[in-house]
Amino acid sequence: MQVRFKVPIFDVKNLFFTVREQKILSNISFEIYSGEYVAVIGPNGGGKTTLIRMLLGLEKQTSGTIKIFGRTIKNFKEWNKIGYVPQRASLVDENFPATVEDIVKMGRIAKRGIFRSSSEEDARYIKDAMLKMDILDLKDKMVGVLSGGQRQRVMIARALASVPEILILDEPNTGVDIVSQNRFYALLAKLNKEDNITIVFITHDIGVIADDINRLFTINQKATICNNPKETLSCEEVTELYGRESHLISNHKHEHIL
Amino acid sequence: MIEMLSYDFMQRAFIAGIFIAILASISGTFIVLRRYSLMSETLAHASLVGVAVGLVAGYNPLWMAVIVAILSSWLIEYLRSHFSLYSDAILSIILSGSLAIAIIIVSMGGSFNNSLFSYLFGSILSVSDQDVITIMTFGTISLGFLLLFSKELYFISYDEEVAKTSGIKVDFLNFLLVSVVAIIIALSIQVVGSLLIGALMVIPTVSALQFRVGFRNTMLISLFFALFSVILGMSISYYFSIPSGATIVLLIIFIFIISLVVNKK
Image 1 (tube, rainbow over the protein chains, first blue to last red):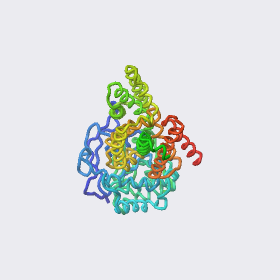
Image 2 (tube, rainbow over the protein chains, first blue to last red; image 1 turned 90 degrees about the horizontal axis):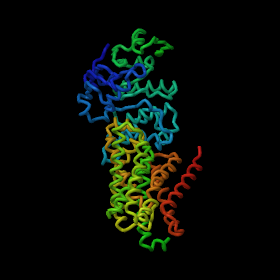
Image 3 (cartoon, chains in turn purple, brown; image 1 turned 180 degrees about the vertical axis):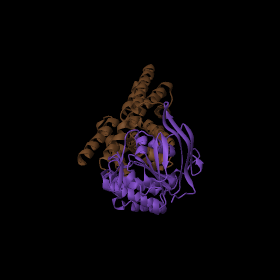
Image 4 (cartoon, rainbow over the protein chains, first blue to last red; image 1 turned 90 degrees about the vertical axis):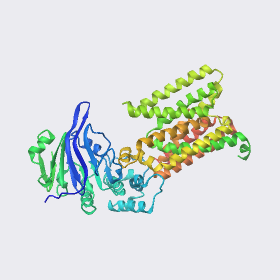
């Protein structure tokens, strides 16, 4: 059964992005609703990250409109409602002087304001975020000594500390082992179902999360929106999307695009 | 020690030196973490243009150094954000360009070479009462800004884009940070010297980073190293009649080597 949600968090219409006369994104339109779990797939260079960067206000579109919580991106100020975990999440500078707690505390900085020092409420949200990501016992450890999977959870805890309504993750799996990845996917599903956090997740591992997601966006300059991700994509569609002969392979219950 | 502090000029030098150690090490923490280390060298050379203009035109060299350093920091940020140039190339061009301008201005002034020498290498004898007041006034404002925005600046140093997406005014804070650093450098060149101030900003933090502790402790260790080097350096400089700036920098480098060896992986 398809669930329709009331509040559009992102309302994107006729979005174009061109760099030096080269079209990166062409006529993209979609809405993302509160409570959804959206996976974004597509070939490297297809414009997934560019699209996410535009949603976050880091890139300006050539034309088209983006509305966040009903406001145009120019007038939108409540950025702390959006938690962002970038591609390089687990590739931290090992010499950077930061404990796990230092990093998670960053999630409260924008919310805190300049002239107010940390409150008990801040401390509670920071602790909650660490508990949820199961990193409370690591709080005094330097982030540079953690494994890829642990760092990934720290970065999500930082995003969660601001109590976001939506979490945007851009392939944060680099340098993370398979066991940690699966644990990470389970955590995302839990955040979506139990905490009602809207999730937008750029990934190549579509098969693993097919059971969790509501919708699948495929981006390769243009966008195709699949409302029934369990049927995933037919081989023809994947071939068209990736621009070469591609196959969905099944490995136990997990599918990968090759 | 007591005998040394019975002289007015040493009292002034110590007050100025301690203030500068605090300012340089705290701002240096952000400079190093933001990969702006070369910027401190560039702004130190740019402030020499202000010193040269001040000496030749009869204005207070310290004030002129502050003004030119701030303008240069804005120029660097403007070039960095509006043109596709490598950051280190911009810094290198402004560093050599401003040194060339300073040399030409001073050569036209002829008899000011000795005064300029004290700004190049630092001279505790040349710190006047007015200089101490200027250092304390601007220094307190700069320190206030750094402490007020320390958490935001730390976040930006860690990940500028994520800081931006969380609603932190990254461009504004970057602009303020370079302005404050420009002020601190201009204030420091009289005590440490423009050729050496970069070391006082960068090396205490790099030494503190070897201990691999959190942000707060890194800043405190860096502060301790800077204060220790400045106080001991000025004392050695007084007793052995050697230049203060060079002595301070050699002490910091000594601390850096010890930190490196003690914390070897």
